[in-house]
Image (cartoon, rainbow, N blue to C red; front, side):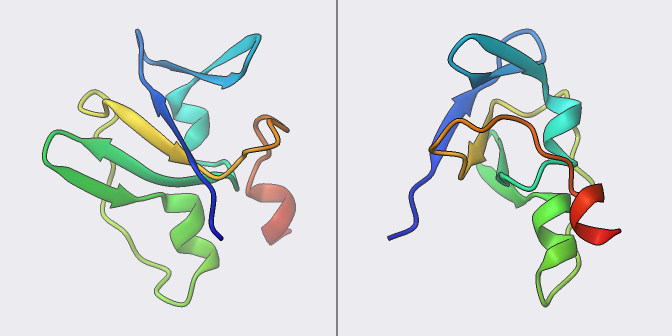
Length: 86
């Protein structure tokens, strides 16, 4: 079962951990981000697209994002994709 959390965006940040907010800019580079939700659409995360077979997604206009779908159900927090690809 693929469990995810939907993190609402408030003032450009999401509640990445129950006690810590992160700027959604970081979500673009986080291994846990799955999709960015803008009104009427969901865009695959650039970090997730990089690790997938498709390796492609469109640019995410972070000003339009209303929530981020995240698979970090254990609340490990931000983990950069750069550690995975290096």
